Amino acid sequence: MFPNVLFEPPTSFKAGFPSDYEIGTVDMRWKDKFGVFIIRSAEGLYALSNVCTHLGCTVNWLGGENKFKCPCHGSGYYKNGINFEGPTPRPLERFAVSLAEDGQILIDKSKKYQQEKGQWNDPNSFLNV
Image (cartoon, rainbow, N blue to C red):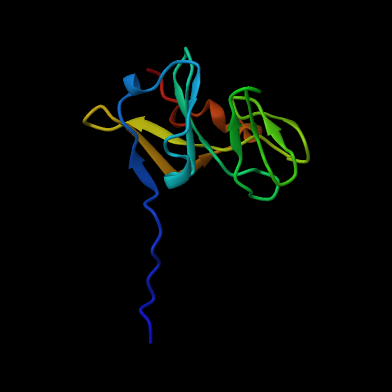
């Protein structure tokens, strides 16, 4: 007999302060632990899933080529998560991002936003900083 318990990582986590992220770069420090890339642009900050929308493989950031690339079937995504090559049917998903009371970035993976459904316009899919 074993207890019916799932040991899964938390769906939300604090990712430091906005000033910890350089404008124009893809931050990979949360990729392995939480499956999240954090990208800060001049307009703000967003959190992309590292799961390819084709068959669920883990995408990698190729800084030299300035794109995300799926090693399984060759799907490619721009820095903003929009797909442009390979069999992937749609862009990467974003996670909800907000500021916690202590000023740190709070990522909530239980809330996903899809570009093709117009959900990237939702204020919770992007943090103005």
